[in-house]
Image: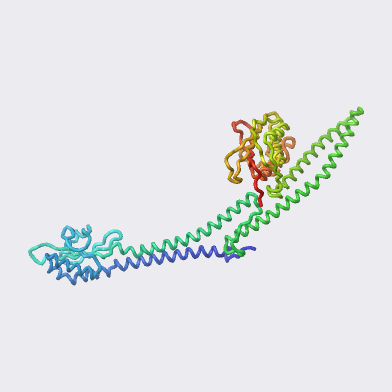
Length: 484
């Protein structure tokens, strides 16, 4: 069933809503933090606060002037001013050094050029750079008119950068909340996407019985719908391929009887032709009949070989490559290699004592196909077959592997064709001549046999870099556990 769609053609569901709400919540939280921070800074460093400082200083101006020179009295006055303003208040000399109070140790550079305003008793606001709060300066002249001295009274908000704690704490609280929400959402999405990706990979590798596990019967959101679509696709593909394989296997099986009859008929006719030739009949019709029956016999053998390959392939495919399709037994690899190599006059490199647990008939079919292909590729060249044991444990089967290599001196296989040649009914362009190449099932069957044993096969170049091809077969030493 198709997923519901919103107007405009875009699917709308739980995942869409979660993503949308996450971004909306993030935007609202960011706006709230910005508003709190702006209100805090605007309220604390506003013109109203500066005016309040100026007013308090004006209230204590005469008292400060009268106490000029009396450090104890000055300290008591600026202490009361600091408590009233919740600010740090200090007394400074002309050059900007603090002599009393709790203000900054030095006046900012902007205070020096404004001494004339300070002498007139005008409050001066000096704004500093960055996030530091502004300073309010007030000049207190000496009560003795004979002295040309002033003391600078400076008021600075008591907390200064501490006021940044309000927006800072807001940000510190917001980030974990938003980060935690984003982490939960991301983890949920990535975990489920990874599960879909892994399952899709298994299906792509041929495990068509695999299905993506769904957490609920009904799809919750778009990811569940995607997983359901994958499962439905895999089910349809499996049914389609199963039907094709069953049909092919049944047709191939039904063809075996008429082919057997044709072989018997050809043999009878060939015997009659031989009788005519033995009687001295060397006429042209007899010679043509003899040649035609020979060609027919070879064609029937080729069709029979094709049907045998199809039946073997169908048996492996229908049993999903492992388990009952493999009749495992223990046999010596060296004896098998010599047996198949003698058929095509291949050279067997020395092989130690290797005992393999596998289906001997299938492995012999595998090696025979490889050697037959190699001999067709180089009719006059040398073929080599070798075997060994790779003690490194294979991760897929947790078992040491038997490695069998077949090398020839033929034209080789181009890198771009080394994977395609294992597909059914695939033949390279320069081997389309029926007399040189088969029907394109040999290497496909080789890969199926390898997979049925939990092994692999690949085509590469020769080890010595010379012209030719090299096929590497890897099979576990012991029979793999059957797939469920």
